[in-house]
Every structure is written in structure tokens, then in C-alpha cells.
Amino acid sequence: MMVTITDVARVAGVSKNTVSRYLNNRGYISEQTRNNIQKTIDLLHYQPNQIARSLYSQKTQLIGFVIPEIAHPFFSTMTSYIEDELNRRGYKMILCSTMHSEEKEKECIDLLMANKVDGMIIGSHSLDINYAGIGSPVVALDRYLASSIPVVSADHVQGGMIAARAVIEHGCTNVAQFIGYSKVRSPSFERYRVFAEQMHKHGIRCVSFELGLNQFEMEPYLRIADKFLTDNQDVDGIFASDLIALAIQKRALEMGRKIPEDLFLFGYDGSYVYKFASPSLPTVIQPYAKIAERAVDVLIRKIEGEEIGQMEYTVPVTAYLPEREQLSAQAQESVSDDTSTIFHEVALGI
Image 1 (cartoon, rainbow, N blue to C red):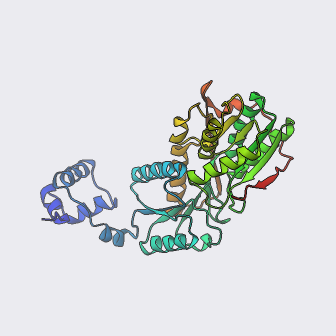
Image 2 (image 1 turned 90 degrees about the vertical axis):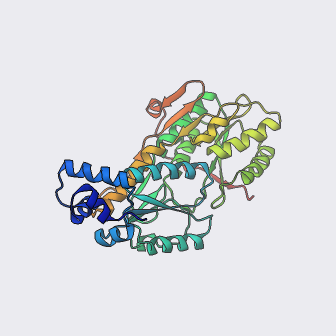
Image 3 (image 1 turned 180 degrees about the vertical axis):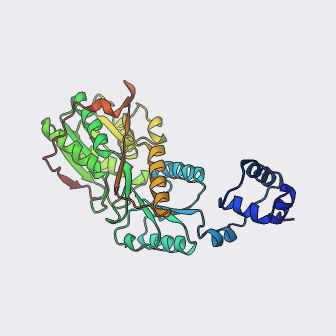
């Protein structure tokens, strides 16, 4: 038999209206009465009618999270932290993985709107969607969606500086970096720009290889690694996201190259995957928990009608350096911030 609000009121010895006000956090209720109602709810295992509550409060307590690929370590890790943060703030998450399809993303957004979500966090990579026209508060995750939509990301300038410092200190003379699809506007391009500029400043040859749109799977990365290592045997340093770095490391070791003596690899992301590397993979660690906290906070402020003046939010990164263990990003201050050089792009065409 389903427990109703009437049952809760009867057992708690209060009116239905008092229980309703408690559930919707409206009006004054003494702390003793609040505790009594909550104990009764726990005792009876009462589940509030979410539809009725949303009609009353004009809120569903639902947030949509749109990403391109749930299997990718960055997005799966980010999903976990955002769901935890939303739950802590009294919200539930509806996850939409677009599977690299712009059409599916449009369908996902329509679905979220039909379910009257209170807001959305969007980290997908589609190119032709009018995000500013979504009739719900939106926060962007590491993407520039529209001038009216705030974006939250790691401090990629800091991350690029850390990687550059490591490559310079290792003594590399001919390096490559793997960059995301350039038509996707993202704060992450700051790390590529900064890295290339530092290489130029220190007289180190640096070529950037651009990946295709929504290229996230390991198998294509392994094919890219095969082609790259075959065609660029003189490269002695590589900066890339963790999965690409691991794919290159795997293929390089199979070809008999020594890591890091022959080829120095520096990763980016710092999800769980870098911990499986052997030899260890130095990497920039994105602050997943803090990014989630900031993204959810900004979104809830928008939902509650607060005016959002700041449109870009960056969170400091850290780094894993095997020979030094965990190193604060602030320790990289000696790297120059000269930003005068534009890096060269070369497409792999795979």
C-alpha cells in the first residue's frame, strides 16, 4: 500500500499543510516539527509525488547534462562529480550522451525541455545548434556555446604552462602536440596555444596535429599512433590528452622505443586512466570536483533568477609528475607567459 502525505501527517501529529510546507521548504516550521516530520518520512518510507510538487513549486528539481560520449574517461568522470554535486544540492540529473550526433543532441535537448528540466549543463561538441534559444538556464562545460551562456573550465593556460615546463626541462628538441577539432570553440585551446608559444620561445620545434570532430575512442587513437610514430621517428616529445598519450606510449613501446628516454610523453586530463600507464605518465589533472561544484553553483544561481555578470569561470589545475609525485600548478611560475606566436596546424587525415 502506497504511503501518502495524509499518512505522514497523521503519524507525525501535524496537518497535511504543515507536511506540504516542509516538503516544499515554504514558511516557518520549528526545528522540532521539522525533525519529527523527517523521522516520520523515514519511518514510513514516504516518497513525495514529484509531479505534484513540481506543479506547486514550478520546479522539477531536474537538471539535464548533455555530453558527446559517456565512455570517454573525461566525460564519465565529470558525470560522476556533477551528479554528486547536484544530489548534494537537492537536484537529480538526466544524462544525455549524444553519441557524436548533432541530430541526437537536438532530440536530447527537446526531451529535456519536454520533461521541464530546471536547467542544463552542456558539454557536447555539436557545431550547428542555437544554444542561446534554449528556453531554460544553461551553463557550458568547457565549451563556448553563446555569448549569453557562462562557461566553466579548468585553467588551461596554467595546464599548458605545466606541460611546456616539463618538456623543456626534459631537454626535448622536436615535439608534437595533439589538439582537438579546431572548429569546436573551447577554452581548452588555450593550453595548445600556450604550449606552442613556449616551445617557440625556447627554440624547440613544435608541430600540432589536429584530431577530427568527436574523436574519442581508443581504437582510432591507436591507428593515429601507428601512423604518427612511423612518419615522425625524429620526434622526442609529445603533449596530448591522456588517452592519446597512452595509445602512443603503447605503440612506441611495441616498436622498441624507450619511454621517457627516447620519447617523452606528457598527458592532460588526469582521470583514472593515467594511473594504469607503465611507465608512469606525467599529466595535468583537471579539477573535476571543483569544476562540477562551480558549474552547478552557477546554474542554480541562474535558475533562482540571479543576474550572472561573470561569463567565464576557470579552476586551477594540478599535475602528476612521477619523479615529484603531486605538484601544485602554482610551482610552474618560472615559465614565461609570452603569447606572441601562433602554432602550426597539420591534420593527420585518418
